[in-house]
Length: 468
Ligand SMILES: Cc1ncc(COP(=O)(O)O)c(C=O)c1O
Ligand SMILES: N[C@@H](CCCC[NH3+])C(=O)O
Image (cartoon, rainbow, N blue to C red; front, side):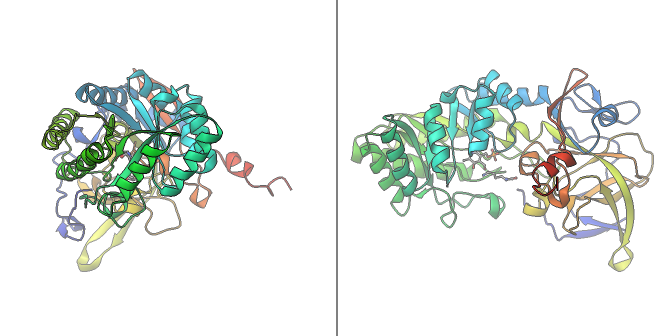
């Protein structure tokens, strides 16, 4: 996450917002880099994605709804596959997964990373080739490991001594060999929100390189006839823009890879550098494209392997957000608008929509920034600084902290928030018994329900007293 000066507020037309947010020339315009590639405004000012006018989409499917731009998703997947042609690309399913997504990922030639029995079940139900799956998790249950072994998952990324013991036992019982990668902690302070950084020492993932635990884990896996040692795995965190974190991590991981070669005489065939590539949520974010990332990472790996005089292993990466994040937006209906007086005579418009922290927890959880646009009509009213909030019983239930919207936004209007493809539907909840929105794919003027809207009946089905 780019560090905005979140506290820096300035007075603008009687309102206060962050210093980086300036009044748009035309509040109806889209900022193209924040939207999926087919998004545009119609002559009437409504938002059209994949040839579908969001007014029609909401009339047919209701709101809120996640709108998934199929062409955009496929193009981003293809761009990674093409740019990283010497690497294997695993789409990180935790960002957003459904059977349709699994099929698109497989059709575009990518592999898939799953991190729970549930995600594995989705992948297998969609008919994914198990060999093209990687299975993550710092606390996989015995049941999950058995399922992965029996399905023939291509790589299991182990994360603890207990897990190595468990896997040895399970593989032995099944007279099989488990293909294993070892999640290592590179000791890097990634420049992102603390909760989504994963390579500093004081957190739950991986074996520390610095403490020697990672080397010991490699030696143990190497000695176990029930395990096949594939290589090391490092993931430094998420929403990262600066390649220096990847560089430091790659240096340390390749140093360990070389030590294994020297001291154990084993040339591990694989190396995974994880995902974490940032996307633009606001105009402040300036992400690299896959071609730039491929060039940078390729150079780092080659340089380090040369320095340590080891063969370049088969490298893989695991982008999630960078593929699905910009491919989706969320469309909401406005329910109420309230002007709230602030100090010093300033005021803020609170625009309440029919979803909130249950469909996008990222603002509350990571202080994430989003933007939005009026999606159902053109407005010639003055831009006015607004905060888009949800319908939950929580004052932190904010979807978009600050954005300029036309000052005549009113109940019944549609608001669309771009960049909600990653970690929004996948982290959605039923807080306040609010059913989760559907995911509607759009392409060539047609809609297709990828995940249907949850209903109150779905929620009541779990309530064992409901029939009494
Ligand atoms: C092991 C691993 N790989 C890949 C990812 C995907 O990260 P992102 O969606 O930021 O690319 C994550 C999530 O941070 C992860 O934990
Ligand atoms: N859930 C986080 C990303 C971390 C996910 C996996 N390690 C986000 O929304 O940004």
